Image (cartoon, rainbow, N blue to C red; front, side):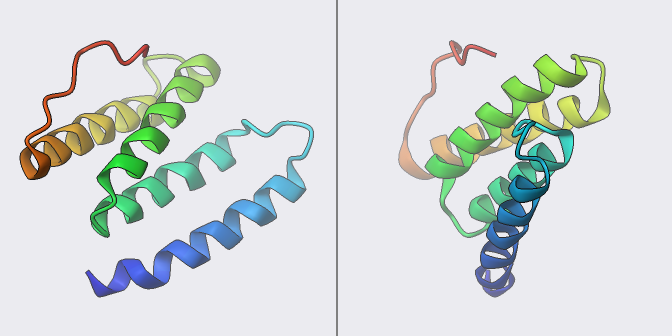
Length: 101
């Protein structure tokens, strides 16, 4: 997808700016939101393995900061499941259920 080629550098710049703003709190919810969208762009670009790791880490931090009933946390659960499914379908990989989340 052509549009993802342009979104990834913009999201990386956004993350750099957010990290400068929130130096004392690198797990700020805004940074986690940027991580989520970067993972979605990577997934759209076909980088499922990297997207999976980023979705997994974002989910872990969202659960810790926001709790399981928060909509952003639920969104991360769905994104992680979708990434696992796409990666498995394309690469014949069957992920185990032990994600530590």
